[in-house]
Image 1 (cartoon, rainbow, N blue to C red):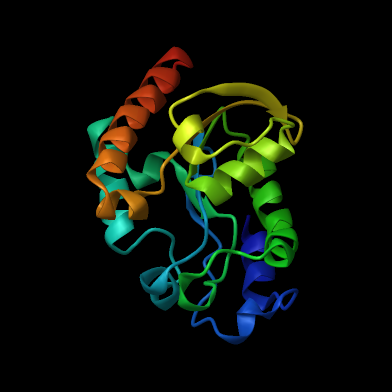
Image 2 (cartoon, one colour):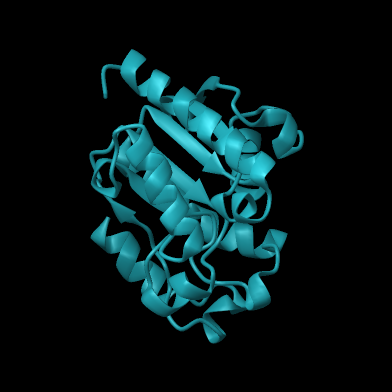
Length: 191
């Protein structure tokens, strides 16, 4: 994992490195049974070089706590490791340039459960697993058991915590989806 972090820090594969303050490789327990994957760093993450440390991160921490987890029990990463300007959506070129890092992180950690936070992470992971990708509203809270990168995993798509900050409906959906995460971890004997 240290090698991946070093590669992310020096990466110049796409143009996002030119405007970043700090890359955000990901962090957490490399032996975690669960990985939470978001879209890309936001402003606070870019400043601190850590994933989910702004308002969305505070909500993520609360959701983790509600199901008996902390950041130390999981690994948290993003599809992109650098912040897109003005938090715009990732381009397909940026996703193609950055996801080899994420793929390697998933292989190293070997999680039993992957929770995708938002439509971009969901689209990437489910399409890689061979599932047709619908909108996050239709997919959230469902479970997909599949082989991904040589691993047997369960994928649970949910809303991005940032979306829940602006829409109460998404917050309720996130809370419900995290109960599914708890159930799946208990079923796997990991909680």
